Amino acid sequence: MPTVTNDDAPLLADLMPWSVAPLRPGRAWPTAPEAASLRARWDALLKADGPDREALFEPTRSRTLHSSVGQLPGRPSGTGKLVRASGPCPEPVRVLAAPFDEQWLIPDHRLIDTARPELWRVADEHQVFAVESIADAPGPPLLATSLPPVLRSGRIRPLYRRPGGTEPNLAPGLLEHLGGRLSLSPGPLDVLAWTLATVRPDLTVPLTSDAGLWSRGVESGRRMLWLMRRDGERPKLPGGRRPYVRAPLPSLPHSRLRSSGGTPILTVHYDRDEEALHLDEGRVSPVPPAAWDFEVAGVRVLEQWFTARTTPAEPGTLAAIGPATWPQTRTSELLELITVLSLLAELRPQQAELRMTAPITATDLRTAGVLPVPESARRPASVLDHHEEGPEGQFALL
Image (cartoon, rainbow, N blue to C red; front, side, top):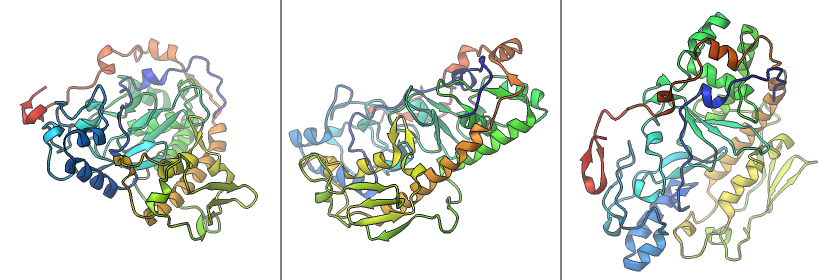
């Protein structure tokens, strides 16, 4: 993290004032590493009747087979009660299920206890979500993703308040004030990039009027954004440092990966001296120690990634339905994840060199009228310019 000499840095909550609480899925089975698993789970649910369907669904106080809810904004799923649902699985969508762990979700409001519709209304190809980490835990305090975030986290702060990348979720007047102090024309992505590079564990964001320092911070943050979003050219390490499969990874049946007894059959071990990741008899190297040690909210990212794919599910549940063997796509995703974590770790020295000069303090922003932000900036924008389908197919303009 950067060395900070500014004790009056503004809060992230003031710079990006509109935030959404994290989703509460309520059940694990509508999320999976592979979309095919979700389609198979949906089919199994709909083939079951009566008490069997109810048990497979895993009802909660918020969602049962008889719940009446509206359509998830922007997603063409059904709104009839699940007790009599039929038809194909709603098309799964890519989501951020855990830090740096992209999985798939059935985007059906009937399956999610608390879906945060206001977040889905602004989720599109232009959106970037800043996701706060769990407080007081090792690792980066802020992540960024282009995907709808469904992970356990702190507040979620969309960069834009409206679809199409319009109306930035920034304190009114902040861009103009920064532009005047820096003699530049920063855009919303520049502010988010700077924030990623400089945000502190207490979620304050030191600002500067030093144009050179600002440019270095934005450059570092832009690279962080690219690595975290992974929505452009795929990242690569230089030749000789790229991770490869040196010994074939085990192609274990799904029934063994999710065996009874609570302990995954597939064991993961990291050899620090060899910089090698062992998966039973399989081996991936080189894996830099910085990639293996990379943590978010005090949890190793790579370990969490494996846990999500090898922890046993209760036999007979929908979550136990998965691929017959370890898919090749998982290995490809693992190699890319190692690359991303390695490159992010290399940026840490650059962040540490961002020694704050010519600070723009919270007091400065209050004097300029940027702070405090109006209460309207903390509420979602009115983006409902079309009908959304309500329960049982009834349309309503909210």
